[in-house]
Amino acid sequence: MMVIGMVIAGVGALAAPAAAAPAPSDVATGYGHTCTIRTDGSLWCWGGNYSGQLGDGTTTNRTAPVRVGTATSWAGIDGGTSYNCAVRTDGTLWCWGSNNRGQLGDGTTTRRTAPVQVGTATTWAGVSAGDSHTCAVRTEGTLWCWGFNRFGQLGDGAAVYSATRPLQVGTATNWASVTAGFAHTCAARTDGTLWCWGDNSTGQLGTGALGYKTTPTQVGTGTSWSEVTAGYLFTCATRTDGSLWCWGENGYGQLGVAGNYQAAPVQVGTTTTWNGVNASFDTACATRTDGSLWCWGNNAYGQLADGTTTHRYAPTRIGTATTWTSDAAAGYHNCAFRTDVSLWCWGNNDNAQLGDGTTTQRQAPQQVSLPS
Image 1 (tube, rainbow, N blue to C red):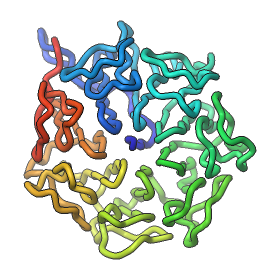
Image 2 (image 1 turned 90 degrees about the vertical axis):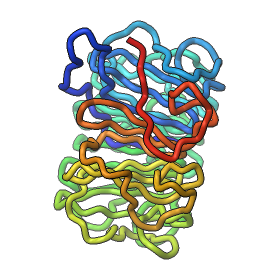
Image 3 (image 1 turned 180 degrees about the vertical axis):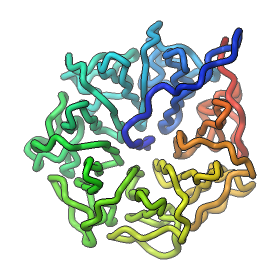
């Protein structure tokens, strides 16, 4: 489905060595494609391109990274099922790829094979791309959503069935981050509260009961939520005390605990050193403060990197490295950065989304070589 991020991180501070190719600094994965932003602000994508999601002006699949335009001002990106949205350093927002539900926000339902600007605003701070809806926050703390709205995932009270341009979610001006799932949305406020809305058929809103919500509904009464990420039918989030919590569908173990679906947040183990989490489809990955990386849930394509295709109901460590950063993207294939700013991907590779020049499935992280 999508990499469903929090507020998208900007270009990293680490510079590439002299005479070397610029290092990658942000990564996003979709169903069968991957995109990354380098420290020089350039944008590169590879993998499946049936909807133009690689942004290179074609619908040709690419087995190796291709550059998206010539701009060197890309700051952050998130990948939906078959589209992407990204912000630039000037605060503009751009989307491309599939647009059947208006998820590109350009006022049409026309597929775009190259980035198109979303309106004229220059105050976009972060964006999250779902399956067919998109949400983003602005620097003044307002929240906006657009695209498909069958389950109220745009947070507008289900006033429209779909929207091809951004609609403001309420009037609050203290939104800090947002994440778009398959048909639900969650967002955190600057006061540490967490709010969700949209589809709730498996408890993915965390309200303690089933039944969709068409406007933001608070998750419990906690005021210590830090990061939140939405997968297909589930959600995970960290708190400021370093604990990790998940809720919703659990058929593959994507909640990181044994049992059936959970309609309210349940803690994943007792560890209090989690510092980042990312979910998509039925898989989640998270990092700890010691630099270790852990994944759980669906493992059909070896995306848990444990040498099997067995689904896991508890976090499974990815190798022994202690140099993983919190910038990771999860799904049917996973990608993550290490502290030396190298980019690694593994899992499904049917569309060459791992960027290694093949379509061979990988059950262990493989370093991505980007062009000079």
